[in-house]
Length: 139
Image (cartoon, rainbow, N blue to C red; front, side):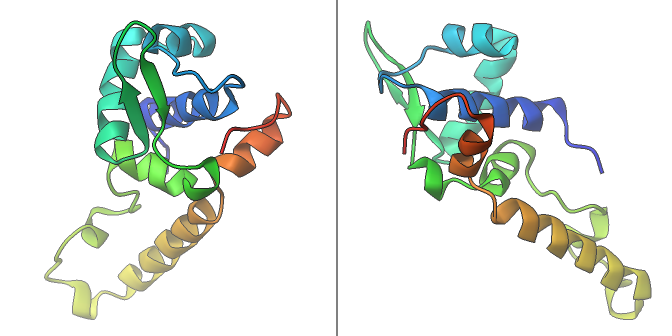
């Protein structure tokens, strides 16, 4: 399983917001520059993150983006699902599969998916900030 660029960039952008020391909103341009991400592409990602309630916007001259929740309340799974949708490793776990009741392999895919969800749901944006050693994360 590979995460898309969108998922990886979303985590990086959320980390940039969480590590911001002064508490002022960051503009899309600032985040794009810091992370080396196209501003247009980041705009698409932020639309999804906003819809998921993970970021909020501040309008005006000094406007920009802030975290929508405390960094301790945002899991890596929240971020990835916010931009990727489901992270199910196989299509048949995403919906109804006519073979599901008799498919032995499905049990393995469910186990794999459970492990992925468990791992990513147990790691928060705050934890990632702590790993970065760049500074004290904003909650």
